[in-house]
Image 1 (cartoon, helix red, strand yellow):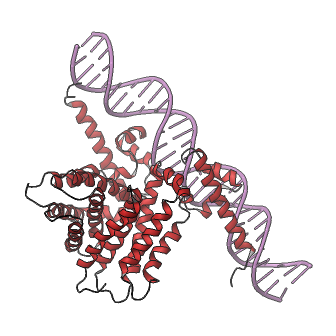
Image 2 (spheres, each protein chain N blue to C red):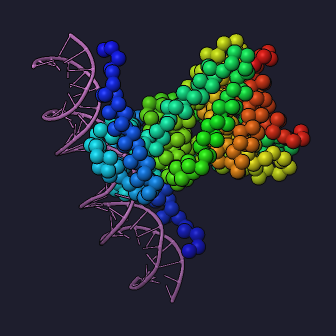
Length: 195
Length: 195
DNA sequence: TCTGAAATCCTAACGGTTAGTGTTACGGTC
DNA sequence: GACCGTAACACTAACCGTTAGGATTTCAGA
């Protein structure tokens, strides 16, 4: 027991990172579908079973930062200034996420994702998880009077905003446009005012 | 060319139906994951390749009415009374769909779907398609002044309403609750009024 | 009846994923 | 420093969904 201190963890993290880096490099070089798992494992110099002990699926190799994403959304709710309303905080975070995904370096990756049905599908199911965890965070927000259904609804809408904005011609403007709609929906779900 | 008249089409439809029925029966009897494609094909007395010429994937065997669903949503927009506003028409249709899915006989099927990650994921990606086609229908609605982004957003929200309502304790009430939020979002997206 | 095409079949494989079973390398303990 | 439990990793062999390739049957129309 106790805290596993040091080398072991570092080696494990290094292995994981090497696999992820190798996979992404190969995928970008030759296309996601054209590179097999056995090949990624060989190039990263690990066994196939080791690869799958670090990543649950081939698609997960691409969405390595999945968990960061999920955490950031929830933290945008829980860690905001005490007097800041919910939605502006979420809007800021979504803005940041969209900016991060449409940055220069990220373009080839998203191009690859859009080119592979398997990756698109996987991303969709990721978003479902993100919406659920965001809904939980919103529902736990103090001084809130909306129903559970309303919280889950708004969480979905926020995730939708992220997904739609990324595909829009002007992502940043789209975020603002969609959030105006979400604010209206949120208002109407409030028995009293005060968000 | 001309219209392929009769027997051929009937036989094909019969084969398709037999495969779907057999698959659903086996899945419900022994669990989705516990029944293999080869087994379904054998029990339906067709070749595996034939099965896959009727259904694109194992999951598609379960969501046989996929296309109906998609068509009904689009038609709710295009076939509504000339003076009926958009959202009430969609609300009616979503009500009908939710009622259909929460009907008595359908319970075991949805239970099975919720128990299989593969099926949940597939359903998610179906919804994406449905949202896209609904967005197209909404965007094509005459006398409409919203932006493309707003149309796609509302389409997503409507699909979300369906998904969320089905999981709610009181599905019918949830539909109404969520649609109140969607109406507000739609209003705010209108440069002028008049839906 | 003949012909073209659609529907079906068979075989064999490919690629992601997992189970089963060792084998190493590390961390804490004596 | 020797020792043991365990976490990380490796190897093999398979399972399962899916597809390519190509043969064969069955129907609609000329």
